Length: 195
Ligand code: CO
Image (cartoon, rainbow, N blue to C red; front, side):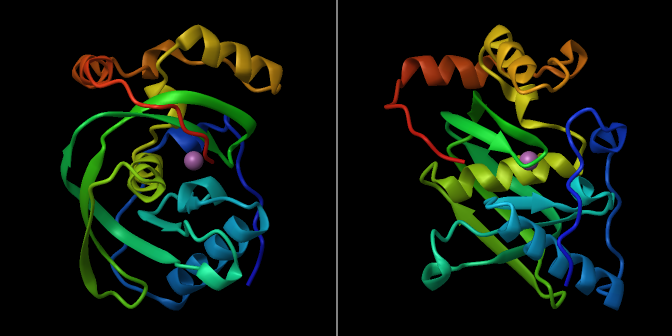
């Protein structure tokens, strides 16, 4: 049980593709505990293993708002098997302290993964909720993709990153997402605030 150091944006390993987990060993169990400890200590909604320097396909999410409504979910070797709809999400990331910007996300996702005991499960979230968005955000970390790669306004994102003392947006990672953007513009939605 350790609160680990969270790697900040600019650390090269955050851009690496993480490796699959082959066995839920003691080491993996300890990694999962550290992910939860670190996530709760930093008031995050999700945390992926590469953010604490382990390039393995594991992330944890808890969208509960207080200790009474905790709902931790562990995802090992996740695969997003369906995604549809488009929404705007105002996101941040523990690796980007205090920097938030609008990004494009799918409204619904269906993911299959193993839980902390190695048991397979399928989870479908169709309401564009914090959970739906967190799954996409954390899943990306396993492929070296960061939330700013999905930003709707590159210049605004750059400004915020600079203000927070972080490196600027790296154009080579920017995702075009034309179809998502078109769908967002066709179906405007009220803005929402979240972390
Ligand atoms: Co993140």
